[in-house]
Image (cartoon, one colour):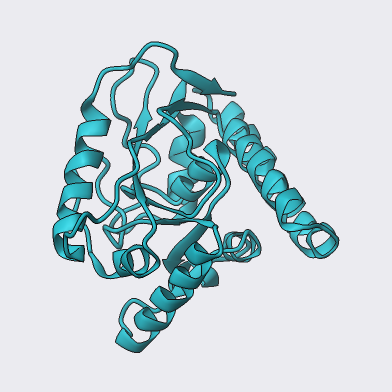
Length: 254
């Protein structure tokens, strides 16, 4: 794709980020939770579209909560992709909150931030998550704790699953994949190593025919498993979901 068209995509996406900031600062204080959720979903779909991505949704989107979504983690676009499929409150590392502009938007969408290096803060967030689940909310976590290379999954950390166990809430495994125009996995949106947000955004904008596929599995309960055993089982299920062929009736969100 030409550099000119990629630059135009990035410019539109950048302007859309400021539009999102306006929504968070000006409109959100006057809206109820349901209206905010709808705004977040519509805004996320538009951002991906500006960057040239199409969203495909597989599986059943469970609604309402309580529910905890457990997804693999590839890119900073993962949060936008899951929001585009359905609104949920994320639990993310505190570093994201310090990202220019994006951090403010993610915080405005209701994200709970955690200092992963602090055991005390992790306990605080788990307790808050359990409270939100008991209140019937839908939360989402990336149990890998950081982004992978987009090809394989890192081990799933189990700490945050304690919130689902404490609240007796189900967990739904979710698989994310970025695919190119040939249907093969694309590394363009990956955010690892020395990558910056701009590097990832530029590679994504220059790609042609990118699709982000969001696959929802069957919600499951702990069924007597401890959180570590449950984390391993969820990781295996996310891997299976990524590799399964497309079912009939696949949904597409454009």
